[in-house]
Structure formats: C-alpha cells, structure tokens
Image (cartoon, rainbow, N blue to C red; front, side):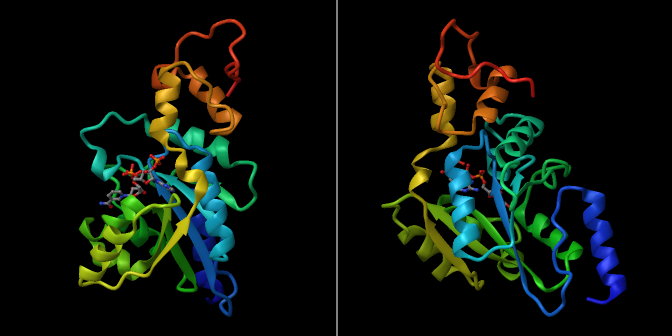
Length: 243
Ligand code: NAP
C-alpha cells in the first residue's frame, strides 16, 4: 500500500468511526473477523465463539456487526437495530480485540452479507482478509444467499457449532455448490446458550445472570425489551443501569 492508499484507507475508517485500522504494512497479511448475527440479544455464547475464533484463527480483531434488517427474518419480530447495537456495544467494550460496528445497522434496506463484504473490500487493501463468523446453521444456508459466489470470493467462512451438532447438512450443501467456499467449523460448548433461550427467560421473569454480561441485562430491563415485567422487590436479577 503506498502512502496515498494508506491515507485513503485511514480516512474511510476514521469516517466510519467503528471499523479497525488494518492493513498498514504491505508486507503483512491481516485477518479481520466479522461476527455476523442478529444478536437479539447478544449472549455469552456469541462472546466465547468470537474469542475462540480470535485465538484459533489468529485473527487481528473481531468486529461484531448486528444485522440491520436480517434477510431471513422479514416476517419475524426483531428488536430495533439501535437496541441490538447498543447491547452489542455494551457486551464487547471491555475486550481490546473486539469492536462493535454500526456498519450494517446504518445501511438502508435488507442486510445482505455480500453487500457488507463488497463494501469492506472497497475500504480495505488486499492484504486484509475477511473471516465471516456466524452460527453453523446459517453457514449451511450460505449457498442460497444472494450473491453467494461473491461471498465465496471475498471471505473465509467460520461456522460456530455446539458439541454434537451434525455437520452433514452443511458439508453436503458446500459439496454440491458450484462455488469454492473456504469453511472452518468451531465447536463452542458455550453455544448451548441461544438468544431465544434468553428471550424466554426474560418473558418468564427469570435471571439472565451468567448468560450475558450484566450491562446487557441492565439494558434489557431499562428498555423493557422481551416483555420485561416491573421489578419485584428482592429479585436476583439486576436493577436497570443508567445506560
Ligand atoms: P439465525 O438464523 O438467527 O441463526 C442461526 C443459528 O446461528 C442460531 O442458532 C443462532 O443462535 C446462531 N448464531 C447466529 N449468529 C451467530 C454468531 N455470530 N455466532 C454464533 N452463533 C450464531 O441467523 P441470523 O442471526 O439471522 O444471521 C446470521 C448472519 O448471517 C447475519 O450476519 C446475517 O446478516 C447473515 N445472513 C445473511 C443472509 C443473506 O445475505 N442473504 C441471509 C441470512 C443471514 P442465536 O439466535 O443465539 O444467535
């Protein structure tokens, strides 16, 4: 990357404010993890999966990117992008190699991963590689996503699974695809936790302690998400924090 190119990358990143500055040394290869998900809400399973991907794949950074309008959830009730982003920010801010990004939340229209990767490829120089990390269920469907060939070309894929998860469906889907995907699977015991489990617990007035960071629980209570009921005296869960 010459000086002009380096300046252009730096300006694009600084303008965004929530993307990492990577790719400065042309002799080096940099690995950016992109943690894609709805994060409704984010939980410890997501955080452990991202940390494991960071270690196992020698990533330089993991950028958490809540989907703005998730492509496959048009008929479902999804918490606002602002709330999901805020919870993601709260959950990731104490980890120096995690970053929460509004990149997809701020984009108009349905969120397609191919668009995200194409835009990131335009911002970053060629020595930055993208590792798109998400649940193995979602990874197995990638061959059906819009511009799947572009995704195959622009990113390595990382499918996070819980132990015992059957990868046969995902493997068959990639074998039958005309495109060459580079896929790594990570077994993450903490993914026994799911966002729907957390939502059910809130609905049933049960504690989220140890399932998601306390700041996220505080945010859920303060903003009455997922059917939070008024707090009863002496509840074991957290009081709403001033967030
Ligand atoms: P989903 O169908 O809600 O999730 C499938 C499974 O994966 C669930 O068990 C989910 O658990 C888990 N999961 C989701 N994100 C995860 C993550 N980052 N790490 C570990 N497990 C994860 O999937 P989704 O959230 O709608 O979409 C996942 C990603 O794929 C997003 O970035 C989305 O934009 C992208 N996507 C793109 C297209 C497209 O371009 N056409 C279509 C669909 C999805 P939890 O519910 O606990 O998270």
